[in-house]
Image (cartoon, rainbow, N blue to C red):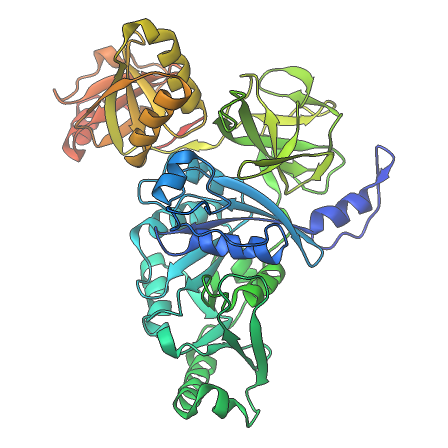
Length: 544
């Protein structure tokens, strides 16, 4: 059954399933991805403005003021003006309930970013109009492709001097390997930015900057209106008409099914900072994206509009409220309806339970949740029983969602506490931060926990680890960089890693769950291992 077109009614605990279907079909859950400084957090703020969730946008650059981006809650983020953790925000707009997963765009982001994408149904890719596709965008894009989720592109900063829009489209197609279809088209850039042309309505939207307030001055003018020339100028009008002719004649045709398969990306142009094109982008985005999508479990597929509740844990964050030393497990609801007092079944823990203090979170602001539906993200108090990838469902259901991939770290360091008397705090702190997915912890075979090998996707996470251990667990650490560049999981269950014939610069390690892995300094060492150990299976991804 297509959950976008519900045509049947069943009862679910005395509630019409059609009512639940109506709520679910109003949900949109997406992640925002970008390279550093492309304007992702600013765009997030403006979307929240239009949803009435905040009244004035913070500035991610405003380090000397008390005004910080609402999605940046950790103290280190406010100091640096960047996002290093993934934030979850919800707001309502035009009858829709929108869940935004704001991922870190910093070049030293963490595995937390990858996992957050596993909870999204679509992604907004923000690109700097003056730079085009950048390295971090490529990494995040690959995760989206792996999941076949729709990608909507917002080319930002058109109020600054930008590349030719045709060049930007070509850049997306060549570097990312996805076709593009402009939904609107910019009229100039920088000081000459006059607005955007909407290809569907054939109207020009001429904007005036408004210093971050919600309401934006705009004129909607038909492309055939004689007054257009006086508003955008003769040269800009002639250039626009030439571009439209070229787009209509040579550009990719819009295909909604190709968009929803992740094969075609609709492209919008605008400026988040000055609100050029943000609201039209939001309105069109809601039409382009789907309600919550089905999720794969070990035995098949779980449909969002089902007569049972289900969710999975994709993120764990400790000490969001330092005064209470709390630990929050973030869950993506995959099917049915959640009620605050309902009893659920924790599959991995094999027990029935009630989810404690269910809440929705915007940065540090929390609101208790009475009910939530498929597509929503909720945070629940975690006394230490949840792990990333865990399945929670109605008590009469016993199935398990497929595991979330563990992505290979790219940087490694040996970490130990300075004060040996604080071993307990050191073990607790490193284990809790590892359970959140920001770092991965390994040990040499038969070694104790006096020192651990920490692997991270981006080196900023070493700074975050040091900062959090000092501020949240009162532990000072010594951190020594290691020369390893590659890590591989041993896929064989019947191989003793101690008996492997390996190059001298290869290290045998295990993770906290007892899985065996190998650390390599070069591809040559990986090749050596495979050639000298017949049948050895080395895998680039593990499962949490």
